[in-house]
Image 1 (tube, one colour):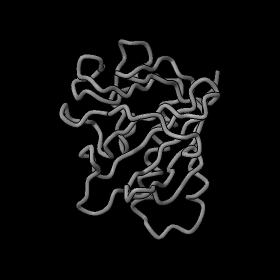
Image 2 (cartoon, helix red, strand yellow):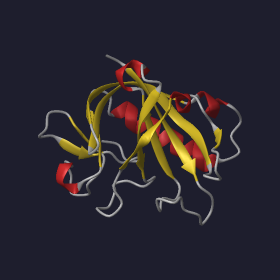
Image 3 (cartoon, one colour):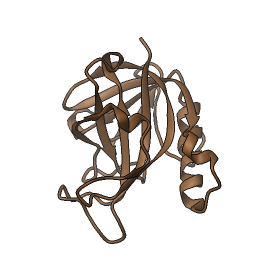
Image 4 (cartoon, helix red, strand yellow):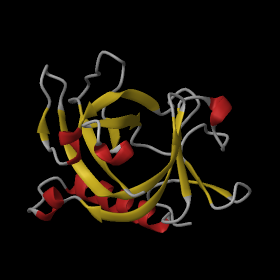
Length: 174
């Protein structure tokens, strides 16, 4: 079953961190079970890849389904989000420790079609979209624990058959 997903850039502000210690990062939103619950399975990853062992992906509390379409300020002075990519995926498995999925379709977020004043965000979105498009059909895994990852960095990897593993790194072609 195809599920919708989106990846947003979550900016918390220059030199600021959220209460969980995170600065600017990616938020990954997945509409598991066809979005029937109205909530999204949500993960956070640093913007830089490959991830270091002390800077792993994090499972966040489920978010409201509106984040699949939302760009803007977040209440409680928690910064703002801007969608970079949207698409569909097939969820293989997800729990508190990791999520594994296969990208089926991917596109730049509609909000990026407007004139861009922030060329760094545009470049970041293009790199992420290109990497996810290049990974179509491969399994992608976000993980919270070095014990459950499939690479030495402890983070996002793609694998075609479990033996052919490669880093998922924006800006680098595989």
